[in-house]
Length: 406
Image (tube, rainbow, N blue to C red; front, top):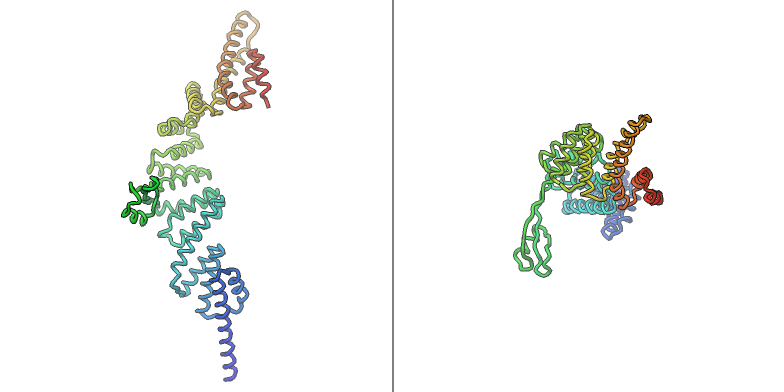
């Protein structure tokens, strides 16, 4: 019996010795930069470590976490680091390793963003936030932005809701000074700023506090709800956002667009006029009011706003086309009356009057269409102008437009 116990002890000692040996080899390879070699040793020795004691197991988990970190398997790496500490693992470099992990994650996310891989970037930034939610709230904000850019709206919405609930503002102080040598302004960290203030290398030191990001967060929540077609929730969010920033042009337009979706044209027009107060040279705003008045049958008002649209932006094609369409709306009633006339002297006289009225409508449209055609040969404008020239008997103009028809 004593012999068997002795054999068991010897075997157990040999196993432990083999575990330590393999682990040491893996650690040395990792430290030399051979991450793949270190990983292969641990994988090939998987069965050997099944009977490992707590101390060896913790060393193995810690090394695996480092390997995953180097390989960019950040979630797995972080999970193993947490497992290591939860099982009682302690290492003097652990905190620095977690800081480096966070930095690696963020740098990888930045690279993803640069290559438009937003769906890869967002979860990485969210992981960086989760590593230390108290101080890494900025990463949650950037994760939400990446999710939006990747059209992952549900994910972005959940991130923005978290930011809203924590009342995140993201206000920071930025530090600037002018270089004496180049006379160019340079931005510093706070510590650099305090150091250089004591030297003569820089002048004109100044501090700048950024604006709160909270209104933008609320606005984005509203925009996402609107994108998802959840207009009631979007309206609730945008009203809250406007309380924090009532003059924000994007918020005004967002709320106005919601009213359009709800068929509340009067409220839409009110908000468009409010938006014009903030941005009086924005042709799109005038065009939108023109469209609303057009739908409401306010022809004179609609024409006024369409003309203002193309005055502000001579390349605004829809402004020209909508203006012409509105002017030509009067043609149908004229043609209907002409077709209903008889052959009496009075009817013939009335026909001539109506014909002149119809031609005058066309003549009103000619300079508008000619201007649009001169901009980029808009095919709808070309065909309409060709037909008008034909009706007015302008043979030269008709042939010219016919040659432009594609």
